[in-house]
Length: 153
Image (tube, rainbow, N blue to C red; front, side, top):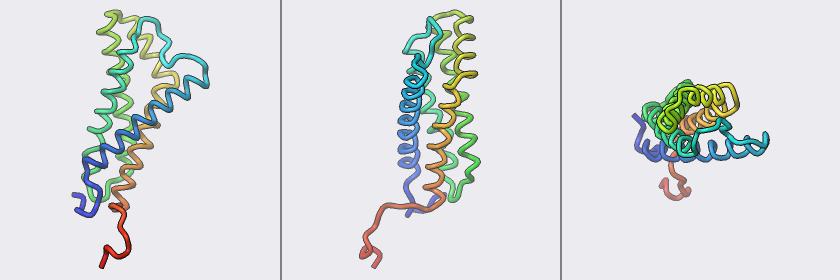
């Protein structure tokens, strides 16, 4: 259990989740800009499906991170498992959302092969890895709120 001097677990997970969201938005935006193409080019997949997948992946990220963040000195290996789980949930949710929105298994297969063999899933994985590693580093270093020197007296 984390000590009372450390950042509370809900705050730590919340900040890490916002950082994950920011990295996903920036990564997908810059990736799309660099390759000069849409993030998902499979025809028939709506933006709603992509937004639902991103939203569920943020919740999954927070869910995977909350357990390790509660520990006194969590292992950095938890960052890897959090990243892999988050990327898997994103792909699964995108596939299910595409299935519900189109009802076509061919489109589901196309979008899943596109994101899993392309740059989208690795970018999701890297964003989750960076955010979870940073959160675990804050927990491991016993970082707390900033204090003025005279507050310790």
